[in-house]
Every structure is written in structure tokens, then in C-alpha cells.
Length: 519
Image 1 (tube, helix red, strand yellow):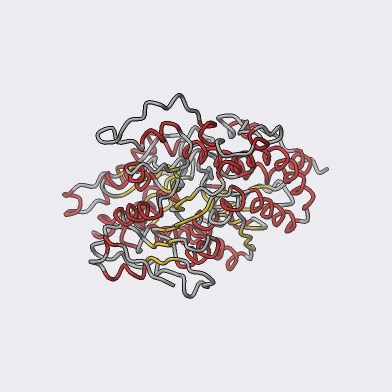
Image 2 (cartoon, one colour):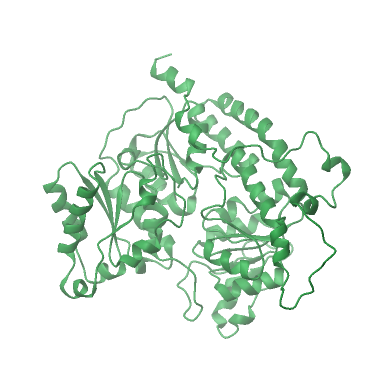
């Protein structure tokens, strides 16, 4: 295993073991960078903090909740609206953010009185919302404010409200992943089992580790409901606070993102005996295998297979259209969390895209293990890279595109590498059969954009060609394709609509209706 030393990090020798190149025939014991360690001073990490992991990743997608940060207003602004956690209640949690707005005087004299005032004010401002989550921050954790006592005092005075307290200040872990653990354990210890749900199906699941980015949750729930499965709660995308208090009555925990939410699944198994089943909603084959697994658990494999057959027939010709045009394109796979390994092999197998690098800012060793095992030989794997290392990697590898977050994505654009937002998507959802085609379409549009081709010219020094006429994406992407592929009557571009989610909210489900009627 050749460790990779970035030139920009030669002055920080500790960084050497945080980047490796996957060599021929290597197993994970020799191709694994060190990961999920405290950030090395001087590396200027782009990581988030544990507070961000608790509030931004896990908590905020709950739709009918006032999410209040007890700390300086900058903390809540930093974790507001940067992911598209949509919901079916007019996106309340996206439109609003709340903070107690702690100032220097409160750090000196205490901020518990300020917190109580803000809690009451928030409930009065939104009387239709009766649930709240309060997140501690570094400042208020350091001064020792007893958030739990303040919350209980308010609940005693206002019996119709319920408040969840998450003590996950920024310094509670090496990265935002520490915050995932904190909020998972706090939720099961303080809220699960405090509400009894209405069971309306013979098959009941919790859908865990799903955050409804641009509608991902609603696409997957549509499949489950079409199989006759009641989704008791979603942890936490488009999830309801009280539904999540009733997680203990599910028959099965279906886990999507193991990095962020395996903790609560494991605790539900220990405490309530609910089994856990890991699935993958990205890609035709992984999704099909996942639906079959869920169907097998409940003995309704035929219902799962009917969905698979229908969806594959509808969308596979469109995926194959893009595959023909994306073959051999190189990608730096630099997303967050589980997408590192959910995407590593399937984008190669189903779209023909080659992964030349992968990284994680906050993932654990397990994430790297799965990601490296699934990517191609020669890929550069990096733990917790900074901006300079990212730039150096792109200059060396010359990818056609990168999948990453907004901050490194904007850096990539500076050196004229197109990027897709792997955290919040460009034009999602990306889960589901149609969603996977939307993803392929976005990759195609980014790589073959004629405007992007022009951006590679530096008008201050490059000679501007005068013999180039009008160009379209098809002219750029199809130039080396065979006549048969170019003029195929079976393959086609994406034919779905701009909004593939809203229509699902009014859909009816015969299996569920029959079960309610006792049929």
C-alpha cells in the first residue's frame, strides 16, 4: 500500500497515513487510511462539529418541530437551509430557524433565563407547533446551563407542549459524526416509548437513517406503502415528532444510512427486540435487492417483485441512454457519510463512471473499508482532506466531475471541474429508479455542458477559436458513439417531470386500504 503524501502537507508529517492509493490485490488491512481521529492542528480541516451533526443532519429534518439552538446566533445560521430536507407540511423546518442568541453578558451571568424566554416566545409565535428540540452549543455547554431543567419547567407550565433536549456541543466529538451518536442515544433514552401509535397494517417498519433530501424519503415510502407496509416513523426526514416517540412498536427497522443512525437501530434491538435490516435506495440493482429483502422478511416477495419489474421496465432504457455516454468518465467521489460506499461501485456498474478518488471528512474506519472495497484499483482514498489537498488531488487525477458538498464544490469550479452536490443534490431526488436516472441526467448535464467547455478557456491568455460553431450537449457527447447507439429507438433521455414527489402525497394504496378494511 503506497501512502500518498500531498506536497501541500509535507510540513505536517502526521497527514501521511491519512491518504492511500489502492494497489493491486490489496486487502483492507493494507489499503486503509487512518480515520475518525482528532483533526491534526494546522491542516485547516473542513469538518463540521458534533453540534452540526446532531442538529443539521439528524434533528432538523423532523418536520413539525421548533428546532432551537441555545447559543450564539451564528451556530443556527451555519446549520440552516444548506440541505434540502423538504417536508409535506410546507417545509416548516426549512423556512424557519431559531436561536436563543446568546451574547457575551449571558456567558458571564448565565443564559437559562434567556432560554426560557425564547422557548415561550417561539411557541407563542407558532401556536400550531407544540413540539421543540433544543440543542446545546459550545458556549452554553461550557457555562453549564441546565437546559433539561429549563425545558421541564416550561413543560410543567405549558402541558400541551413537549420538548426534547440534545446535549451535543460542538466539542463533543472529532466531527459531526459524534453528534449523530449523541442525538440517537438521547432520543431513544428520553422519547421512544412515550406515545402509543395506531397500527394500521400487518407489516410495520421504522425507516431509519433517511433525511428526505429533495424527496428521497417520500420515494422510498411510496414503495413500502405499495407493498402494504405501514411506515410507523422515519428517523428523521419528513418525520413527525410524535411518530418517532412510537418507534418501539415497529416490527422491523429498515436502515438506510448506517453511519448516522445505526446507533438507534441497535438500541431498539436491545431494548425492544426489533430486528434491523440494512438497505440501499441508490441504483437499480441495490434498490431491487433491498426491496426483495424487506419483502422476504414479511413474506410478501411477490409485491416487491411487481414493483421492481414495473419500475425497471419504465426507467432502465433511460438509464442505459446515459450509461452509453458516461462510459469511462472519471469521478472524485467526495460525499458525506454512507454515500461513500452506497455509490462507490454502483455508479461504475450501472453508469460506467470510474471512481478515481474517494474521501470522507467525518466517516469512521468502517465507511472507508466499504468504500475502498467497492472502488477501482488505483483510487486515491483520503481521510479528512482540506482545501489544498483537494485541489492537489484534482490537479493530479484530472476528474471529469466530482460529487461533493457545496464548499469543496465551489473550489472545484475555480479550476473548471464540474461538480454535483452529493449532500443536498442538484435536481433530486436521487433515490428510487426514476431518481437514479435523474442522477445520471445531472452527471451528463454537468460533464457535457457546452458552457462548461467554454469555461476552460482563459480569455486573458488563451487563443479564442473562431472556427467553432454552435454546439449542443448531444454534439459533444455523441461524437464517438456508434450510429446504432446514437439512433437507438429503445434508449431515451429522461422523460420524468420537474417535480416527481408532490404527486406521491395524494396517492392511494390498495394493500393498506384492504388491511384497514379487514380484507
